[in-house]
Amino acid sequence: MLYKQTLWEAKGLKSYIEERTVKLGEYIAENKCTVREAAKKFGISKSTVHKDVTQRLKRLNPRLAADVGSVLLENKNERHIRGGNATKEKYKSIKVCKNT
Image 1 (cartoon, rainbow, N blue to C red):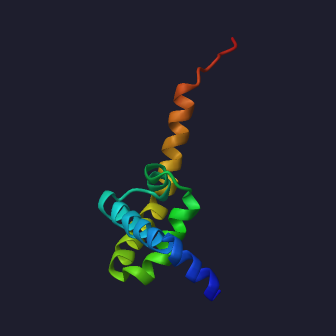
Image 2: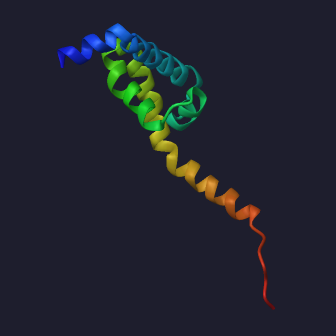
C-alpha cells in the first residue's frame, strides 16, 4: 500500500484527484445539481462523482461535504418527482393511435 501511495504522489495523481473532488463539491453546492449533471459537466462517470463527494470530500473539506450532502439528500427526496415528470414527457411525445 505504501508503494502505491508513493507512486501516486510521484505521478501527481493524488493531488489531481483531490483537486477534482473539491471542484466537484463546489460545483454541486453552488448549482444544486445532481450527480448525473455534475458527471456530464466534468466528463467523468457518475460513480466517480458519487465516490468523490460522499467519501473523499469528507476528509478534504468537511464543511463543503456537509453542504453537498444536503444537496444530495434533497435530490434523493425529489427523484420520484423528476422520474414522474420524465415519464409524462416521454408519453406526451409518443403519438397515440386510436382504433375505431
